[in-house]
Image (cartoon, rainbow, N blue to C red; front, side):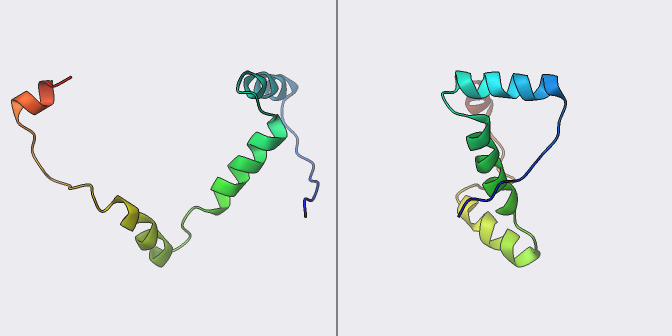
Length: 73
């Protein structure tokens, strides 16, 4: 069930946000819901953070790149 809330922001900022949403073929309301979902999904404690970081296990920290690798494009 959706629930209405009231927010306040500078009029100019709201208008710019609406224009940007329109350029992305969406609405400000839809973008706010997406942001809110992301906001509440941020890990809140060490256990949640550890679970979140497991999705990046493929990243190897500390490896040094060769000159050739650094210059690849």
